Structure formats: C-alpha cells, structure tokens
Length: 110
Length: 117
Image (cartoon, rainbow over all chains, first blue to last red; front, top):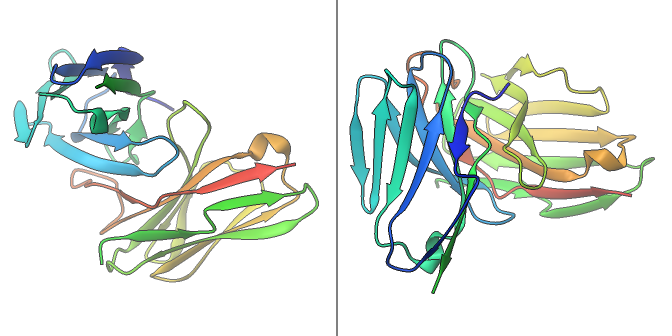
C-alpha cells in the first residue's frame, strides 16, 4: 500500500528557478527517502532523512521533515534542465519495506 | 562497483513464451528486490530476497517466478504472461534487508522494459 503522497503531481519551471515538492504520509516512520527517476530509467537515491532529523542538505538539495505534520519537502535550488525527472518520496515504517509515493513529475525548461 | 545490472534492457514476448529477466550486483549486498512499474506510477514491490531466501512475496501471480541462485544474482522467470503485465521491471539491492529502524537506501538497476503481445 502507498503511504507517501507527493504534491504537486506535476511541476513546470524555468531553469534557474527553485523547485519544491512535498510529501505527506500517514503513519510514524523510521526515515524518509527521496529518489529521482529519469524517464524510463531506474531510480536513483537522492537523500535520506531520519525521523529525529529536521533538515538535511546535499548539494542543491534541501530536505525538511516535520513529523508532527507527517510531511516532508524537497527543495531543488537553481534548477537545471537535467533536473527534469520524476521525484518519489519513500517511507520506512516499522518493519515494513519501503513504501513509495505517487511521485512528482518535474519539467525544467531551458 | 556500485552498479546493479539488469538484462535484457528490452524484451518482447508472446503470451505463451517463457523468458527470464536477470539482475546482478557485486556490492556484497544481502538483500535483492523485484519491483514492477507501470507508466506514471510508483514502483510496486513484487519480491524480496534476504540472504538468498525469499522473504517477501507480495501476492504476485505464479506466472512470475523469482530465483536467487547466489548472493549476486537474481532472476525473474516469466511464463504465460498477460498483456497487462507489460511494464518496467526494476531490480534493486541493499546492504541488508530494508526493514526496521536501520532501513537504508535501495540501489536500483536501469530496468527491463517488458512488452507482452
């Protein structure tokens, strides 16, 4: 079953702009992960944030986690055309396997 | 070597054919996974192998048969598939089973695009 729900479903921006995607989930988590998938390719792990962390950075990526609201956001700063992809959040809860959300399709136009 | 390699990249088969998808990793990971992904949908877990033993089968039809010959290889045998089984099949691995408080990241292959005619 799916726990994460990304918002928006699709996002279209210009190069240089920031992109923000949100993920909401329903049950308590051990950690939350973000993955990127280029069209027709495999998923690539971007970042993992643990339930006791509130913010994490990796290059142009910034992830926040609010466990009280059961939500996370992924910010990509200074977007590039190469950032065009689908982005999925995935939650790790209890002893269940990772559960992927429905994803956000990001289009970055030159 | 930090790659998960899947073959073939593309496969077209008839409903009476028998074919196999293969997955290989040399990262020493002890858990391997098969996911099915339809267009514009998230990956759906099919099977998990933990230390070469099948630990999770997400009620997958028996026309899909997984096999883990050793810790580096994972196969998915296909027989009598239906057109609705057409999808991208993704293999993934992780250092240890992705469960519990120490759940870490998954390493995915590029997938095998399956078309069933």
